[in-house]
Image (cartoon, rainbow over the protein chains, first blue to last red):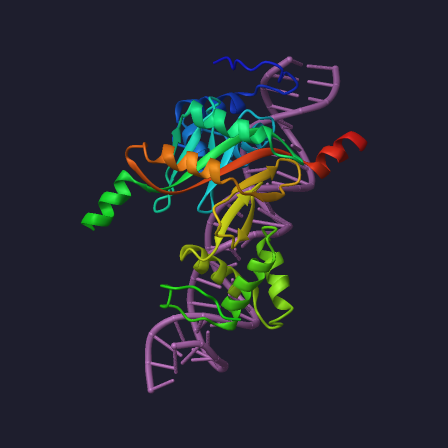
Length: 139
Length: 139
DNA sequence: TTACCTGCAAATGCTTTGCTGCGAA
DNA sequence: TTCGCAGCAAAGCATTTGCAGGTAA
């Protein structure tokens, strides 16, 4: 796999990094560190968890990944279409939600904020996912 | 201090809980666990950090506090006026930002989302705070 | 009175780090 | 060839837990 990332040439594209990014591009469910580790291990059986940690941090700092934290659990994603999050308070599930109009509206408001220079915006919607709602009724 | 919280009677209002909530109501800068611990310790010198942890978790689960996580650091707040966050990518500082119009707009969009029942919304604006911007230029 | 809560200390588990050998460029 | 990176194991820390005594209701 070739990663199409321009302007980020000052780093080595090791197999480990390539597979971590590939895994996150293919698994949009906001995996945890362990889930990334288990997933990548299917391709690179000898990868260590320390390498996964190091690279998730490294790639996040460089803007190749995004880190999300819900209910004390750190999760990762590689979705660079501007989007928002639907977060279930019960199970901690995160779903992406695209709304160009909300993005535009928020950025317009961002333009009027003094003292902070804002480069991105993300709205979190909190509530209950379908499954947890049904579980509440039935169980 | 009397906590004016209705409908939350099934818990004991120990001095520790009262002081933790009081501290967070007076310190709106999104303190960390350690900062809460140090702050409350000025009133209750014998409080343990385990008690602070237990209660921050307990009170968050009951909706008396909100937990925010930025750059891997967990912070707490007790601001129940609907608000948004300005988050500095450099230093991790969080400022509250009130915008009724953004709140209303987001909730209107929330009403049209299928499969998730949404009860609250929070927009995070990411960028650089004034101080970090100046530090970047000067240092 | 009694169930719930606190403080202490120990345990847990996520995350980071130091170091040696290796591989991308 | 060289510097950055991977893997391993150990260390570091934030957070949780078990338990005995204390306290709010």
